[in-house]
Amino acid sequence: MLRYTSLNGRREATLGQYPSMTLAEARLESSKMQLQLQQGEDPLAIRAIETIPEIQNISQLFQDWYSKDLSRRLKHPNIPKRVFTKEIAPVIGQLPIQAVRPTHVREVLERIRESNRPTIANDTLMYMKQLFRHAIKLDLTLNTPPQHLPWTMPVAWSPVKTGCLAKRKFTTPLACFIPISIALAATTTSLAACFWYWVCAKANCAKPCGVKWI
Image (tube, rainbow, N blue to C red; front, side, top):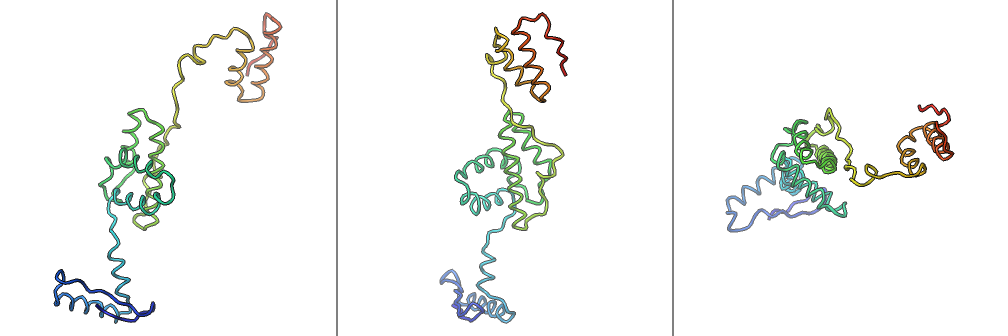
């Protein structure tokens, strides 16, 4: 054990444990720490930095993001973890952080889009952007590949259910007016025209009173 005084007060540094460390190795480690003290450095602070796990690839980056941020901040951190494990890791999980390019991000998204899961594709793109922001905070990269994509993901959509508006039979002008108004009410003029058409139809006019559609 090496005892020394630093700016933080009196400190004790354990050199090692016998028999995993011999007496000669302990003396060598003590000499190394004394040299650090002469250079104005704190041996325990240097040891703490050296014990920080090195983050090299995307999977290691996500594990750090998950343990230091997601698991503490989110109520359901397993959701982004599941997306990463299933969608992102098989493609870029073992790539070095600096080696990831927008083409890799596109490949991840294209695999999801081919399976007709646009909502998952949007979530995956969002998580990848947040993941690389975490890398920037750790000074592991200056590049964010998902931010430089020359395309945008389409908004998630759901197919129109059969038997709904597509197959509904409208028997009264009022029943017809409601869906038409919703579809054409982009402007006040269109909405007013729809209402006037219904009034004319209600009055059994042969023609809708010369309404000009815009």
